[in-house]
Length: 177
Image 1 (spheres, rainbow, N blue to C red):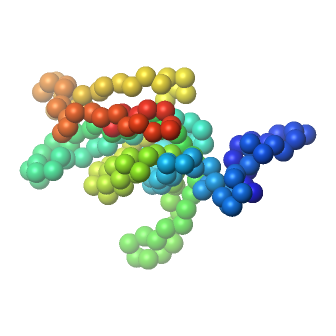
Image 2 (image 1 turned 90 degrees about the vertical axis):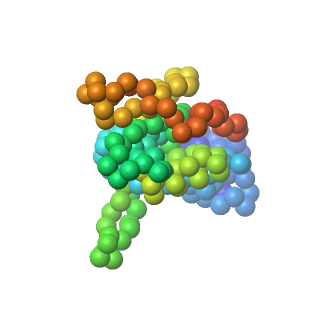
Image 3 (image 1 turned 120 degrees about the vertical axis):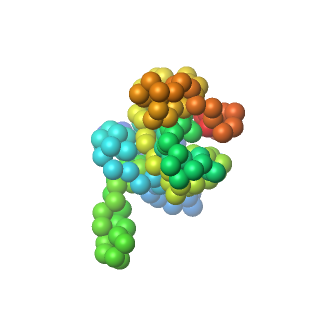
């Protein structure tokens, strides 16, 4: 049986520290029912300079152009997920455009199936940025999103989101996306 929480030297191995019989070991055994582990490719900047470690909580921001915008449109940034638990962080072997193996930094986030879909689409269509948060801060902010023009004072800072923010209900803490 896989270990699902820390066991310290000299401590008796208790049943609640082990995965259910038949659950196997490794990362899969730590995923709560109804949740998924979703891998996000990161670099030192996206992965919060290596501080996004197991047990930490992050918000997920995306940067890109909304659908239907012109090729010269100004990119926007928007928070799509908040208070997401980091399951693991490390490296994986991937192939570059020439088929040569290369190391890629990966962070696995604990999400609902719906959030996994959002992350998958965001990873393919936009640039993802993880933002580390204090583990005691469980409040949900309602940032309006922003554009490059607002950084220079050429436009209002507020950017209308594509849809009203929703809250997901899961066995993990509530998240806004």
